[in-house]
Image (cartoon, rainbow, N blue to C red):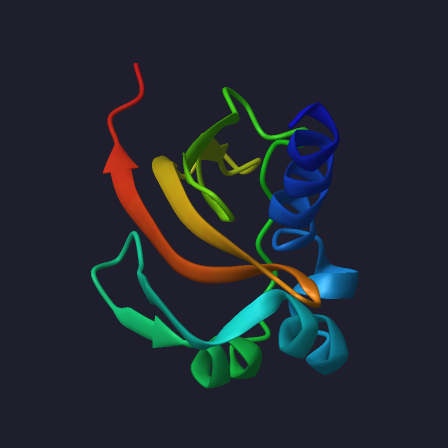
Length: 117
């Protein structure tokens, strides 16, 4: 599982890097076709709508407090904290990843505002 943990950390961090976050090929390879997210703002996102939102998001990397939990064979839950570099907020993040024949695919993600202080 250690190798998978390193790969999943890399995948999670790629979702925050500008060069991969809005790259259509990366999104298609990483996000499951049925992906959806409940965002920190309360909005619901899909794979298609995520690819359209090209605004910059800069968070602390490596991702703080990232943990990986195997839920079932080929199903992993990750959670971590995203802290915006401009100091405008932080969120608890949770992702559900499925292992497919093509590698790990992001099936679900949720961001919940986190009080910092």
